[in-house]
Length: 197
Image (cartoon, rainbow, N blue to C red; front, side, top):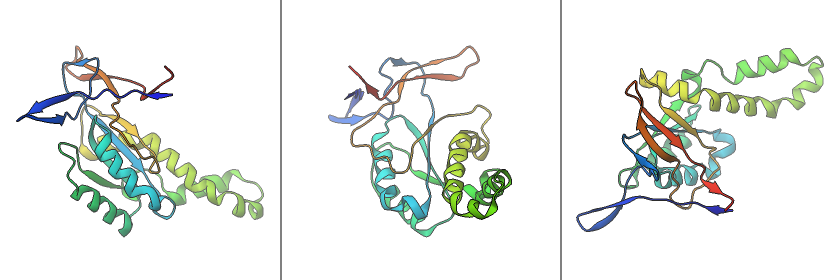
């Protein structure tokens, strides 16, 4: 599998500077792609900062980066360290509290699973892991809608959800082209980052 890398560059004062949008197929407008990174501090912290730094540096089409987790000092510190780095025209990461901005939480998911399990004694041992997993899947599904609501957007942004243990090593574009719709909205066509060619 070959990683397709199409990085458009422009010259600025004689230096080669990467643009913050790839649009390998052409763009007539600048699309907005919000990146959502759900993370569990107790599980993902070891690799989280490397992942966040690689997203800030190498996801070339990102217009905003959102870290979704419960309040944790180590997550706050990692976001602060990554934001202190200079990644030219890349957006800074922002934190989104999963307990304040989502209509569900760990307790809600646990209660929903308990209600479905008939044998409560064996359930306590078996479903504990799945509570966090189901919670993270729900966060991934609702992340875009939540970002729109937090920003009070009339027109929703497109959202790219990235696991917090994924690390990018090269610039990776996700937008193929963007055009203005009849309603005046910038509509993006997305590409696959990987190809079997």
